[in-house]
Image 1: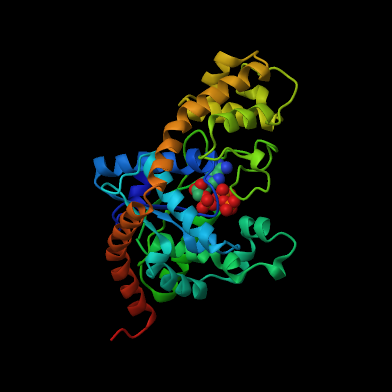
Image 2: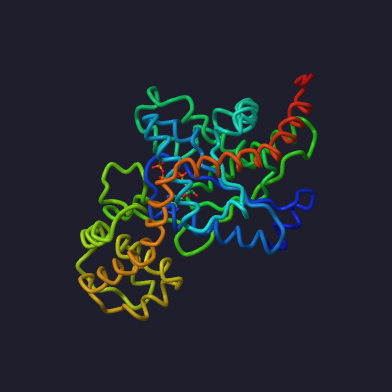
Length: 349
Ligand code: AQP
């Protein structure tokens, strides 16, 4: 962790929290922007002696309609994705949000701290509710307050996220600051969003101005972690591009959102910078580059999807892992909630 962030957090020991919604199949965006980085944090936590906590945020997923059986399956699939990507329940705490009721309990308190105006400014609310805000769920509107609770119920100091979640982590800081100010105590930390790495924003394969998303109506817009080699190759082959050859410099990708996205994905999957990739592929046509990208994506994703499929054959094993994780999570969350109740004046007898 950086010296500056450490200085700001002297009263709080470093702790990392992040989550993913089980709102559909996992995408390459979730993998590169979140899961792969969670594994790096897990390893760093082990070396530097801090806890890492990763959650399947099922209560967030249901802010838009989820079929109950699908939600159960998607939650287990996300747990399988975490484990297959390298998160180890012996090294990190892995669990689903609804098994730790302290999230919802602190979430209510934060609903009373957060202001309507703050929520109305959230880009994700505007994007997801669209023009029909009257018909969106109250949960979708209040989502960032629950996310603040997810983070602050562990006094988490660092939250690795993709670009799209930065605004919500900033709101978490606003909620913590208002709570601390209103009750005159430095009780909650000022959590840092950690946005780093090559692929903090993987874009749709059909539209380079939209992020790759699980809930995109077009399956061709995303690579799912469970796609087989043929599906991955076909989606990359059909990905929208332009007729020009690839440039040799990143500068040449300006105004070429789709081309930039494919180069960015290649860079992230091959652990290179975009500059390094372009040194090799500059001058190539997409007809040559796309098969290279497909081959790389299949090579990287196939072992993960195979392991996910194996784990999904044993749902009871997954449930045991996340049940144990939930118990560990509650050990941290319960005293934080109890102290919060004391601070706000709620009787616990
Ligand atoms: N396209 C992306 N590029 C980089 N990072 C991404 N993340 C999601 N999509 C991309 C990161 O994954 C983490 C979990 O996100 P989430 O599933 O909880 O919520 P989301 O950001 O709303 O993801 P989706 O796929 O778009 O889900 P739906 O369609 O249900 O809304 C976060 O760290 C996020 O930044």
